Length: 603
Image (cartoon, rainbow, N blue to C red):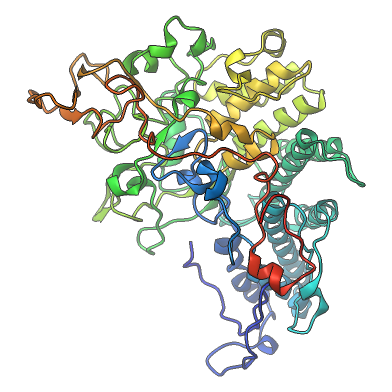
């Protein structure tokens, strides 16, 4: 998305670390400020820059499908998952960048030059939406940050200001997003939806950042002067219900009545579904705007990603019962553990009877391409589209979601559960609507609270700090969120706001393999792989089976048997509870601005 058109205004770009040398503000080859911001087209073209530079699905400005977490890993493990001394204070960058904020403030400063007052209101709303989103990314990463609402010159004392409190920042974010909600168009009024910000996108953003702030304060025990954690969750509820009312844009879950296909087809379609995608990032083969979803899971040099077994075990049975209540679940082999599960499981990993979109050949998991044996397929599209090969590096072009309706439904359910105001009718219109798409039974609040899932509460596999009368239903909503939103760039910051950082220290194993032998991976009764032990003769394939050596091609937790453990040799030093919930501020920035104080625990 770095190729969207924007007008190259010659400005001094502000960052917290430096200012560029003075430059000619009106070179003949470019448009100067005096000649610009004069009509709606000018405002739109200038704001185009915000989309690729603010919209992100994860913390680092990249699509979230390749985010590592306790649910999905790759090789090498990210520094976040290795933790300990793997995480250090960077000299620069590290998320502490401010150039795009200057662009946003530039638009707000000059926008009144435009005589079209309706356009001024709309694009002020656009700018304030992006400023709220920008600060959401900063607060969840660093906590307190400086609030900057104007362009800064090289001698502006604000360049050396200390950090403002997160309460002050959140207050300003709510002011900005409320303006955006009031003045942006609905999705029906905006022809380019879901690729342009609308009232629906603003409500979805407010729902997200208020849920984050409310739960972060609750679970971290933050008691600062200002609004309570309950206030932010109430704001989340209000924004979510406004979005669901239909008055601010018409949204619904994508559902064609095919529970075994609809979830996967939502994500592998080339064009974003306008019913469910509230805001999407546009990709296009012809324009050369592409991402890496296919290669990520199909090219051996891309990290060989795989879902973790503890995450796979959290998927319910198709009748709504718990997989971890099944006899022998701990050592159940792949074909058996795939059967009769929540249909989203086999629409997220290569399971039984999997074939690529547009093809019919059944494909088994390729154990050379996944460190756990649970090979992701979400966002994997057809291999070819016309003359385009989409399985090479950075050649995939399906649109990716920024906000979608299902997430807002989950936000509402979670916020009300944490507030203690959740009712069964609330679940009917939120979680149970999502489950209905895949033909799953609804969540029963009373039953969940009467018998919380011990697997989801375990220190070894779950959310170990959930307590209270609503513990059972909170766990179920978290289960639903993890499954529904996997690979959408949410997981790391979910763990951070729930104060569940230690979940990255839990086991990152995969499929269970009892030992050398032939294994069916597709459920057709025919072997797909042959595993043999080191020091024994390599067996011959008879019908195209993949022949793999244990200890070389496939690493198992107990030598010649156990769980696939592709990252067995990687050192994990453990999450630091006193440090790792916030990121460090780069050392160069602290050197340049002595009023910036480092986050606790970082040296």
